[in-house]
Amino acid sequence: MILKADEIANRLRAKPEKQRDRLIVRPLPDLKGLEESGSASIDLRLGTWFVSLRHTRYPALLVDDDPNVAAKNATLSKMQFVPFGKEFIVQPRAFVLGVTLEWVRFPGTLAGYVIGKSSWGRRGLIIATAAGVHPGFAGCLTLELSNVGEIPIAIKPGILICQLFIHSTTQTDLVDKSLFVGHRRPTLGRIDLDDVARKLAKGQPL
Amino acid sequence: MQCLEYSKRRLGAFLEEIQRLKGAEFPYVHSEHALQLIEGWFAGYLGQLNKLTATSDPKTVRTSCAAELSGLFEYLPLLGFILRSTNARNAFEVHGPLLRLAREVVKPNIKLVYSSEWEYSPLTYLGITHLPDYVLIGSPAHESDNPLLLPLAGHELGHSVWATRDLLSKFSPTIEAKILADIKTRWKEYHALFPDVANHAALTTDFFAQQTWSPAADWAVRQSEEGFCDFVGLRIFGESYLHAFAYLLAPKSLGFRSVIYPNLGKRVEGFIKAAAQYGFTVPVGYRDEFEDLMSPSGFDRQQVFLLSLADAAATSLTDALIAEAKSLVDGNLKHAYSEAEIGAVLGDFEAVAPATDAGCLANILNAGWRAFHHPALWQEIPQIRSKEKTLKELIIKSIEVFEYEQLLKVPL
Image 1 (cartoon, one colour):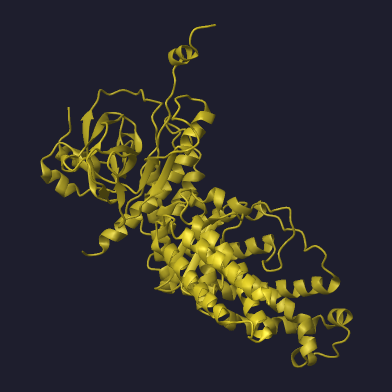
Image 2: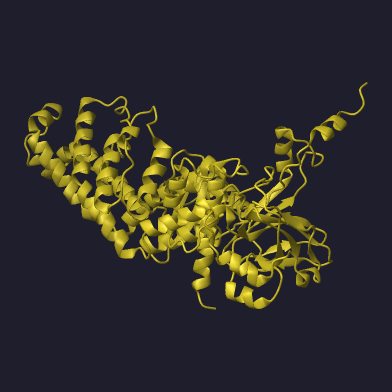
């Protein structure tokens, strides 16, 4: 069941006995405005960090869980900080990672997903994928931003950039241990290979 | 005279480097403005050199070239420092809150360059003639994203406070009087080391006699300044300053002590004294975390004697410096840390959430250190792979939220 805005506001106000049962969004949004919005989501703002990909001597982004490969992949990306009051320009056809200003903490009973705001989409700026937020997640949400239009788009930290839909899940004590927890900056993240993928990656024996 | 031509060329190269640096992506304008100020001054100096010709007075030419060269020696490291203020390794989020703090305790129009250094000790550049309204604070490069060391910025701010309030003039006479009194008390010892000085009176009236003890006065002044800066850091940041200091310097390095700092043990005893007067608790066993460094290498008996005078003079000022730091910080700081607010921030950290309404930077950093030492923190959260990394992220995010809240208080 998707939580309506007034229920989200109630959850954000609540201080259950166990810390892990809290829904937290920081900075705290205007709860009164949220309650009165009548929507089924909460708007989130653009944060101050961006990652863009760049040309280097390495040929490609590689998919491997070898730490050396991860280090090479890191050189293919450039981290940038844009303070409040300054702009970041998303060039046409550019793909960059941004991050929400808000740090969110989900209890074990809630999950969510992030989608772009249509007002940005109409200008060509889309959030490329709907990022899922799993129960137990804590941190800022990485946003995959893409300008599919034909003119550059200037965005500023602090603008409302996306909306977070939240829904309840079945109660369980199991947590997803692969979650990326506790990041304030956008991250490429790891692509973990499971045993099947590792075996297949070796190809046929000679 | 070749030196004039060389001088113009190297100054031209320096200015070209500034041009290149101006192309960097500066998150904050103060770094950019600092570059412009340096550029303006050196461009002006190049203009003056260009007015000199083959027929100019050779002495004037040499003096002008020597001054230019000294300028390059002094300012080239600063260019590197300013460039590193753009490096994404830095925790840029701290800039706003640190600037607000500097404007409260140093002076309202101060500008800040917060950067990283390829030096182990956090540092500030002092007495930069052409950047008079700047405070420049650098943290060691490999720790430049570690907010737990931020309390040490209080020490660096202390240097700016010392300079802007001209505390040198205030405390120098006391230091000199103490040194002269001690020489009098230890006259036999002194006279054996400096037999050419005939009597006490000569210590203040005879130029050569003054030179025998002036190094002790210089060292004591520098030690007093460093002590004062520690007390400013302790007054602003409380217990978190102690932890940051220990993280960086305990138990000691294997080198020799510096004459411009009290020896490590004495320095830490000063912290403990200040903590008692400032009303916060020193962690159990804190003094024992540290050892004195070795005495300076190659000192002769005269220098050893002078250093003992300097140490005694600086130590005698401890109470006055603790009081001075308290008075200056309390008179200017808008929001001091409090136990209640630290507790609230720590509660947020326990919930893996950044703090809201933290009140001040010191509350966040004190809560950060308490979380760092909290043995059971997040043990029940298996997704947190590195407590230390997550904590750093939370602290920096809290600092950003704090800045966000400050910005929202300003009316449109």
